[in-house]
Amino acid sequence: MLLFMFFLILQTLDSESAAAPKANCQINLDSTLFTNSSWLSPSGLFAFGFYPEGSDGFKVGIQFIESPSNTTVIWTSNRDGSPVSRNATLKFGQGGLRLFRATSQGEDQNIVNLDQTSSAHCASMLDSGNFIIYDSNSSVLWQTFDTPTDTLMVGQVLSINTELISSVSEMNHSSGRFRLLMQSDSNAVMYPVGTDDNAVNAYWSSETYLQGQYSNLNLSQDGILFITNYNQSQRKNLTQGDQSYNPNTLHLARLESNGMLYVYAYDLVKNTSAVLDKKPDDQCEVKGICGLNSYCTLSGGNHVCLCLPYFDKINDEDTQAGCQRNFIFSTCLGVGDKETYYNTMDYLENVQLLTEPLSPTETSTSKEDCRQSCLDDCNCDVAIYNEDYVSCSKQSLPLKYGSKSTDTKNIVFIKRTARKNTTAGGLDAVPSTRIKKELSGGPLIVFITVVSGLIIFILVLFFIVFKCQAGRYRMIWRSKELALTDEIAPRSFSYYELYEATEGYKEEVGKGAFGTVFRGTLPSTGMLVAVKRLEKVVE
Ligand SMILES: *[C@@H]1O[C@H](CO)[C@@H](O)[C@H](O)[C@H]1NC(C)=O
Ligand SMILES: *[C@@H]1O[C@H](CO)[C@@H](O)[C@H](O)[C@H]1NC(C)=O
Ligand SMILES: *[C@@H]1O[C@H](CO)[C@@H](O)[C@H](O)[C@H]1NC(C)=O
Ligand SMILES: *[C@@H]1O[C@H](CO)[C@@H](O)[C@H](O)[C@H]1NC(C)=O
Ligand SMILES: *[C@@H]1O[C@H](CO)[C@@H](O)[C@H](O)[C@H]1NC(C)=O
Ligand SMILES: *[C@@H]1O[C@H](CO)[C@@H](O)[C@H](O)[C@H]1NC(C)=O
Ligand SMILES: *[C@@H]1O[C@H](CO)[C@@H](O)[C@H](O)[C@H]1NC(C)=O
Ligand SMILES: *[C@@H]1O[C@H](CO)[C@@H](O)[C@H](O)[C@H]1NC(C)=O
Ligand SMILES: *[C@@H]1O[C@H](CO)[C@@H](O)[C@H](O)[C@H]1NC(C)=O
Ligand SMILES: *[C@@H]1O[C@H](CO)[C@@H](O)[C@H](O)[C@H]1NC(C)=O
Image 1 (cartoon, rainbow, N blue to C red):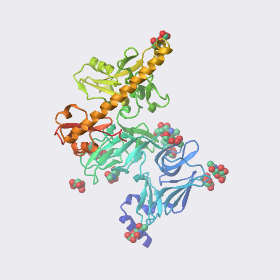
Image 2 (image 1 turned 90 degrees about the horizontal axis):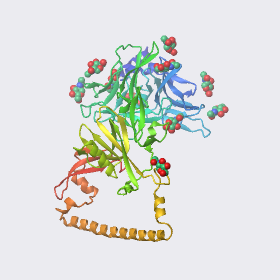
Image 3 (image 1 turned 30 degrees about the vertical axis):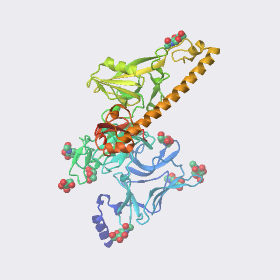
Image 4 (image 1 turned 135 degrees about the vertical axis):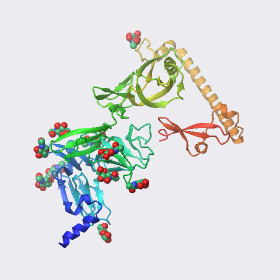
């Protein structure tokens, strides 16, 4: 009786009363798991323990058991570590969970390392899919819901600055290539892994940027993914729910390896599953689904990655590897040498992409002018002509995030710069054969001597001129006689000068693929300037 009352008091005290810790605490201290066993939730739907990964390895995680033959991993510990062998064991002790890898060296590793002062007492695998370690006061010391991998369960919350990261594939649960981040600016956003949290990389968002104080991404009982603030006074539904919801349905949301977030409904009676909703709507919206210099297009419901004209796949099996030029590329060498080099252009329609613009977008040009302008500019790799904006932007490769979309009135011109076909060796033959023929024997030596002499002379001249110029600008700067020179002469600024001019990069006026443009004022002249801060390059 006394014991019973003790339980009652504990239950009312406990904020996590749904977990009913004492009653549910199935896993006691010093319990051990082998790779052939697991700790099941009361319903038997969830199992904490080893699951097979790789050819003959195991990882520790939580599986959702739809049926004995059909299981889904919803959480993985140490997902980027290597799998352990069949002889590995897992021990639950006061310090947490300890994995013994059972190699010849007898290595072990902590899955959960608990603070010594708050020691573990027991643990539970709950029917929600949450695995919890409790202390002797039945308060939660640690739970898997706090360390999500690629799956969000009902009742699990993705809080500020936490993210879901997709898995490599259905069979490999290591960290993959996409992430969904709950940002501190109230917005939940999907990005490719390894990119900055900024708009150019984002491919989906909850569209709640700086709206209210949204801080949690949550999945409701009826399968609606929603975003709320801390006291749930604000709420925005992000996906469609289950029309035919019944208590025998289990919902979960997963960021799949293809970068899309799916909400699934599992009917536990009929053993069927369905996709309730997915975000974004279209696979080609996922930035980074295709590699560099390729673009995504839909074909028969599936997405394919196609290379730009004049490009070939780097790896036929791996669409993410991207594409490379199928011709021998010459940079600006070709300019002015119309005899040796020639350029051709091909184009694509309705393709969206990201590259670094070479120069500000030109407006009020024609399609043909845009094409010609790139053709004539040896730094230009592609030109994007937009029919809606009547604008032309010349850009350099690599091309990123390419995707075909009928919403985009873009025409992308792609340039092929190649050496002319000379008699000896086909289209890309090195024209040195021609030079050799013209200058054989004695004259060649004379030619080389003269040319080297000339080059050295020019270099020295350049050096002297440059030194003088640099010195002059420096002197002008020092004497503050800037008024005229500043407008016409190029000069360099220190980082600090630019920092001052932009008041600490305060006012953003634009964003490019590799940097952000800020408004500034030169303190010396009061001249208005735009300062681009390279972000990727500095790294
Ligand atoms: C699981 O493996 C352990 C150790 O390898 C062994 O002692 C135990 O009998 C096995 N249990 C089952 C159910 O096969
Ligand atoms: C899973 O993928 C990662 C990254 O591609 C790779 O390093 C790892 O070896 C893979 N794991 C298995 C078990 O194949
Ligand atoms: C669904 O799966 C469970 C567990 O495997 C099984 O007991 C049940 O018979 C299955 N139901 C149907 C309708 O197949
Ligand atoms: C596992 O243990 C057994 C018995 O000790 C041993 O024969 C076997 O080689 C071990 N396997 C691995 C993968 O370490
Ligand atoms: C349990 O709660 C009591 C009373 O609040 C406290 O004194 C004690 O330190 C707690 N024990 C643990 C392990 O947290
Ligand atoms: C998340 O959703 C669950 C179920 O709808 C709800 O009980 C819980 O309070 C929500 N948590 C937050 C922080 O919104
Ligand atoms: C929730 O928090 C907001 C902002 O702090 C507050 O305005 C609102 O009254 C709160 N709502 C409830 C139901 O507590
Ligand atoms: C969001 O979904 C919940 C649960 O179905 C519903 O009660 C609520 O009205 C929805 N909110 C909006 C704004 O649609
Ligand atoms: C496993 O589940 C999936 C999705 O619910 C289903 O398509 C598939 O047929 C199932 N496989 C087995 C062997 O039950
Ligand atoms: C390049 O020149 C060679 C020799 O004249 C010729 O056989 C070949 O067809 C030419 N290639 C192309 C692409 O024109």
